Image 1 (cartoon, rainbow, N blue to C red):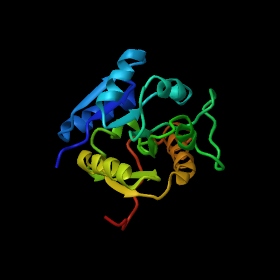
Image 2 (image 1 turned 135 degrees about the vertical axis):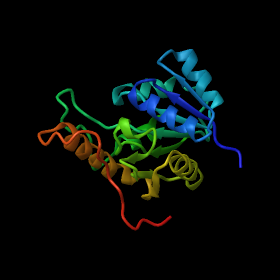
Image 3 (image 1 turned 45 degrees about the vertical axis):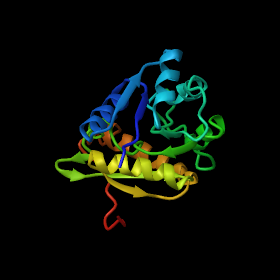
Image 4 (image 1 turned 60 degrees about the horizontal axis):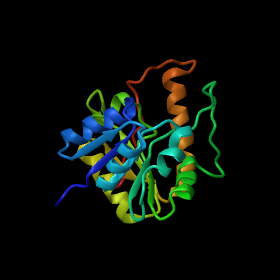
Length: 197
């Protein structure tokens, strides 16, 4: 089976970690920063486009993608205010905003509940973390679930894109556990026990 080509918009911690994990898993990957021409070229080439950019930069990145009808677009962002308080909304997720901006694309929420440090392997101390994947398009979800499994995650379909509202809240909790008052660090993560394959 031919693997999807992965275009990663953003070359920070998240983009770099997913790039390394996907390449180790045998995927072709192209990454780019914010240059509009490079963004468009990468998006045209890729089957899956991962928006590994800060949440406020998502809309501009989408404008630069070019023709996105039928593309799988992955939103791994978490919505934070400048003071690191939660900027999300359980009535409408950031991923649903992305779907509004990216009409015709197949938007998937994934990777936001995992620290960048653990995205390359999908594991912490040898234990596979859950990659929680939400989206409305079954084919697009399968592409992202397959990518997650290939990297080393326990990839779990958590339902419709509407459920991204709760994934974003869980992502914020993960950040609080790692960097908030408890300061547990990034060698932690969530795993859904007895999840269906």
